[in-house]
Length: 505
Image 1 (cartoon, rainbow, N blue to C red):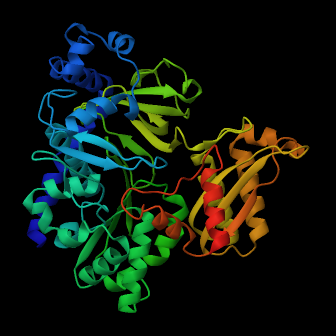
Image 2: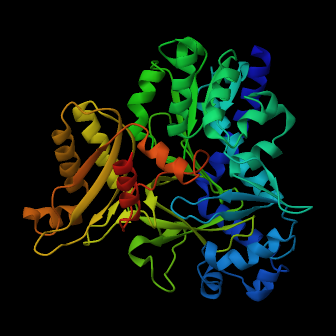
Image 3: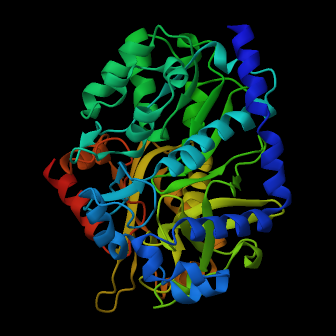
């Protein structure tokens, strides 16, 4: 296995040269992909509608093609789901990634072309390993197996030719045979729908494997880890898997979970690698082991644009190309892809932490913020405040959500939080005060509204009993996979729903 590990590491590191090229020439690479995408789609129904044949510049493209979202592309995607081809993309689309979105009750079906599978999702997976091998040349990752927490949907058949499942299910179904050999547990368990049974089965199937890496969403990884420790009677994961060396995560901010992972995996050498992989595409990889910023991956068949947050909601917001962005400003990402998504706003917001090369951090969602009083609290603000409050009070958070408390009579408004702790703070009121104070420090609009409680009162925080969010997701039939608790909302729907459930429990 050591020889195989050396060969794999060598192969993975060969890609580093190409990554360095797009880091050095980012605008050339993006310009080239822009022309490739436009040329490829000129004879599709969409390409003819917007006369792609005569588009010669990015500016013409921006003037001609409006910003899209799922609802505007949905009529085209529904026809593709029924088997029609050459609608948004020239090659046959047989696969669709089913995504719940974070707040939407309706499912989205994102087309996954052969090109987006190979040139984007799989390339991203390989690059993640390349970067890890480059940063850890003495790694032994390929001497064992990778424990992958797959999605919550079996692959389903729409018609004779079309299939759908959540992204991880689609990827697992299309993986090359060699990759399947390195994965655990087997597909029948990895793609189980019932997450409660699945966690038990995964724990049973993997405790005797030589697991060297784990990939998955932090919340579900912790649930699985606890099952494994319960089954084995061990006190941490290294006693079960002594060769475990890397944890690959994404989908949610890792900061609130970091302390729990240090306890589950008590090793200073443990490597944590964040990725930014969504149903719509693979966008970023943490390329430095001493920083949690992610390198924006520019040669995956995606052309990027960025809308400044202050222009979100405008009818035709101006979108910037890569060379026009600024550091530490919030942008909504707009993508055009080799899966047929054109000027598509994915709903995530990011900030650039570096412009040479382009590195980013995810700051939230375009719909996930509280701005009932002009305070513009985004997820990044909330995560910073919660992380600080946890550090100061010894707490560990499992899940949370928050929404506004509207003005009532003479009373000021406020924010109402529901927080479920894995480890209670040593002083709950102190926790709330530190969270509030940190929000004031990181967000001047929030601070101004909190001045003398004139517009915003001190946050109202509910200490939720164990399993509150798990039971809420279960009641909504949204356990597992890409389903996530909505962190912040500009209305009270989620807060009231969960409080009602807590009352009746």
